Image (cartoon, rainbow, N blue to C red):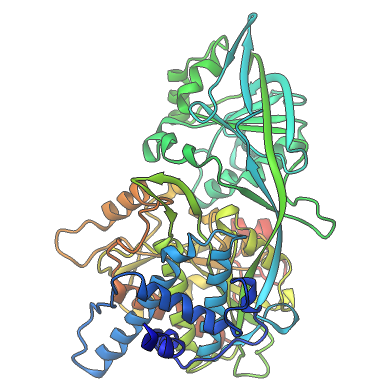
Length: 594
């Protein structure tokens, strides 16, 4: 053991295939361990990796690419580097990397040290690697939480966790409202698409009952946009609603049963705070919120003249209409609030052309996961190996390749915090970047590449909205990679990952996801993905026991860096397509095609 400790400093760098350096501007190690056990941050990272090796049987990287020629050797080394990154970030020692925790801070330190070793420069605040992200943290309390339906002199109390979960009001953590109820379909106001869930109904002073998602008749991206809780909440608050009950539908329940996630009600939620400390995007006019199981539909609908079966039939037929519900609902929420700070990590590869180096392409991946939660088969650590340690590992490998031959434009490598809390780190950066906002030309995001088999394709989400489409298609064709449309549009992932924060600021973006076409005979990649979403997504089993196919991860890293290089060397910055839905919603005259 003494011998291991002597070489530990060098081992932490060699395991990732780079020479050891400290990142300037990083926080002192004493932030993470009492007594200043180590003076320099990289030594601490080395200690953690060393401790992992010394306290369990070693799990050496087992390359899945045979190094029979120099090209194979290069790919095998890249696969080992990605695997090494994932093995550290998804280790139990980091306790699931939840934003605002020591485990996340260690992951942020690791990413910064890796960027320094690659040869990138810090691009955070005050010349350092980090951008602070100030948030309010809200932890729900069972005591004081309530949802009751009163009708014809009879009050029915719903059971916390079993039947309902209350939301958190970040402006008033102990809120109670009793009000009449109205059903408002999906809560979507989209007259340009011929849909208005508020037609002929008044929600002022009432509690709105609505379904999640958006009409299935919308195209995939319109559906994603109108599924957004921000969009729905803004509409409800503007119309004077005082509360909302979200009702699950049978399809949603079949994909992911309520009982999988409800036991994690203690997991904190978070909101960004502004310079005055007030919560951002909280909509205080909606004083109370609750989510209920699909089994509560008959109770909510009783006396309205519409049965649950008829409601689900109307939903499938696309004929939902708003209507009043009988009785009143009482919703009470109770939460404990405190301030918490986390951090984005920002590294930069300066552009090679002085005329274009002032423009920036952002390559992003979220660094956080869910931390420690309810036990599943005795395991309480939600490691997030695929979501999103693998995305971070691929991002670092793409950075390494780009560093060898920088494009004309500069590239920012952004590891975000609090993605799992609502894309908060990405929203903070997109709204208040550490470079001039007008210099951001594009975002390429990596999130949860489910690579469990050799794959011949990739899934680019949001490809069709901008001139990025031609770039991605050209690079994929040159690499003999098939581009597959989103196989699960009902998951509306376009608004559920960090690229959406950049899109909301008018910046063209694409989300590169792992593919679904396996090259192994008899293996159904779609079935593998579906099984992961149903069984392992946001569960402790998203860990290093998953059979990650590292060579395919290398291929995705190459796709990422080659797309970036094409964008970085192009004479014109990317633009939204003419009359594009998101370009019209968020773009500016300078970013839209003329």
